Length: 88
Image (tube, rainbow, N blue to C red; front, side, top):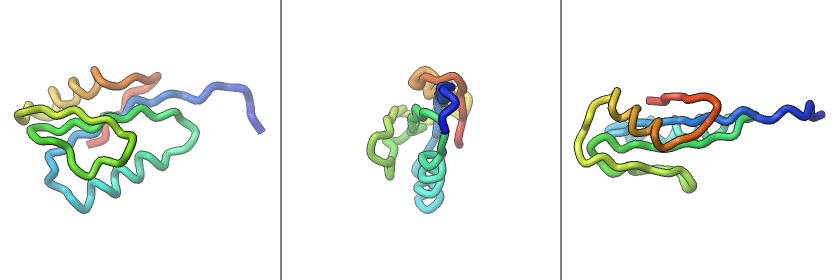
């Protein structure tokens, strides 16, 4: 039964340095499995080109590791949503 309310949009920023090859795919699967929201996700490669990114998820490659705060800022500039979620 629908209440007619719109679903919230969530901008999710995921940072990676490609240093967690087992955990990263599980984390992305968990993020993409969320229900009841419209998800707008981006993976930011902090000093690397992101690997193991699921189809349909956008990426941003930073040529050097700029640290967590700046990586998050770059990601935030590349997503839209009612809510902002940092998943790193």
